[in-house]
Image 1: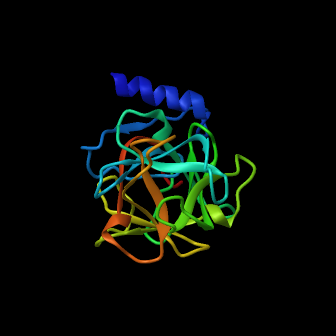
Image 2 (image 1 turned 90 degrees about the vertical axis):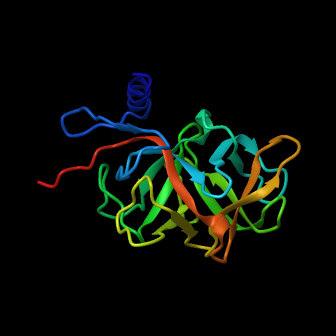
Length: 217
């Protein structure tokens, strides 16, 4: 029941609609399996090794780009860890389409509406590639493009699959580790980009409200 109300709240907040003016979501917890992820879905990304969720908030970095910071958050029940899955602009992809391995996607932070972004600035703790949130509804560039690769034999992104996200411009993989902030984001761990495939740059789609697949006509 609570999940149903949550999905409805997300629908009203995002204003997502289908051709007949309505949309529905399949809600899922981190223990659900096999739910196909589509454009327009709202989800949390869980770092496989640490179980922290990809997170952002309206707090800028004190170094580097000074853009909105991105961290790994330890608690499951935090509204600032939700991301909307969006397609690359200029493609034929639409809301409700499934997402194949190798596809370029964007992730929009639900609360602040900014895009998961990266560039050549150094990350605050480890000095790797900084990952930030930047732009807005009408402001997005190639720094927001991430290539999704499924680990293993799967071809369509599902909730229970291990994935990597590689930043198109820099080649860095979305990465986290046990290096934690001690001040403003105390207890949260650094999220950054690294150009090598490592065990620490594997993620899974966890909790969320998944938009059903659009049937072709």
